[in-house]
Amino acid sequence: MIAIFLNRKGETMKVINYSQIVEETKIACMKMATDLPMDVQNKLEEMRKEEDALLAQEMLDIIVENAKIARCENRPMCQDTGMVICFVKMGQDVRVEGGSIEAAINEGVALGYDEGFLRKSVVNNPIERKNTQNNTPAVVHYEVVEGDEFVLEFAAKGFGSENMSQLKMFPPAAGLAGVKEFVKKVVLEAGPNPCPPIIVGIGLGGTFEKCAMMAKKAAIRSVDKENPNKMLAELEAELLDEINSLGVGPQGFGGKTTCLKVNIEMYATHIAGLPVAVNINCHAARHVKVVL
Amino acid sequence: MEQKKIQTPLTHEVLAGLKSGDQVLLSGTIYTARDAAHARMVQALDENKPLPFDVKGQVIYYVGPTPTKPGQTFGSAGPTTAYRMDAYTPRMIDEGLVGMIGKGKRSDEVKEALKDKAVYFAAVGGAAALMGKCVVKSEIIAYEDLGAEAVRKLEVKDLPIIVVNDIHGNDLYISGKEAYLESKGEK
Image (cartoon, chains in turn red, orange):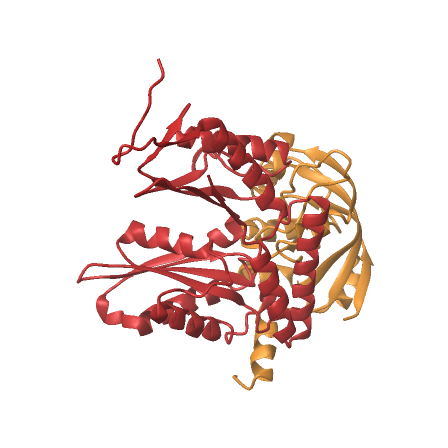
């Protein structure tokens, strides 16, 4: 018997196969490790032209050269090939057949890290710390939307930068000034550790967990797009300027190019709070979007 | 910028000539060790057991490389964040270690231990494809069960690194930023 699934309008539902998700995840993991997104490379080259500190210029040259070697010779650009994060955006008119989405993503990660000769950095739990030997599990977030979209957005996050991230629950009185001060404090404390030039992802509002999730989404967003929200676009530009006046510079040796882009995601919040999360991404800002 | 070529093992004379901010091309034998390997080495010392290699005059590279692909000599091998090794480093310096390669700031205790004895170098964080190509030979010599964290003996040629903390007490992470801000008239 063949079952036919219809959506609410009586149309046939879009069907995504388990094996498709496995395959796309595998390819994404391998591609992320060796192929720096061009938006990041272009931004590095653009900011190199404006950098005036000598050692900083050399660091940016090495970073760009490394990205080119990685792409041409199919070598991981960074030895920390990261923990995989996947944002799944799924229309409610989509059906996944053949197994669970999460199992498919994890199977894809395991295959990608094995076949790509990538470093398996995931341990079973934070206390026992036994390597799972296949870089799974990935961290998967879901968003269900109307329609029949199925989008997988991957990032491979190294922990040099992830470890430098912070979240703070401010009282409303802290205001915009408090937010800006906190973001700069996090960047200064991180200094050379997250491999600057960095991308700063900021979550503003929501609740504790919503705020952290927004910061992560912002940290893996492209670096060449202006925020569609005018107020946030202005705040992103202001913060970028202020961060790049701190003097940290590429690799923390002093210079102008501390940050390539500040990306902010915002959400409503409670009368009593002002949550701010800062998630830092390194210059090897690996992300891939797959639309099925 | 001029690059100094140095060869391991590092003599005190070579160490004394290295200044914070110097760009260096390092050749010779170095050893890899990161978090778990350091924990085991210090535990060995606590139990009066020998280290897996003699650290006197040697350089440790904080790295967990990617697996070596067929047809290549070594995987990608950029530095890992060094502060995680801070708890173990003074002990290793006491044993005669004279160089470390990593990235990021060290603790005040480590900086104190470095004085007149050892140098902390930074490699370019993330530039792992480029640096992996500087490894001409590699061999696992201890803690094979730790996988990427096992202790490896590497033969490197012209590994590009930068002196952060020299034996004279200077710190490039502080002086580099200050020099930049001064040049901008912001300090």
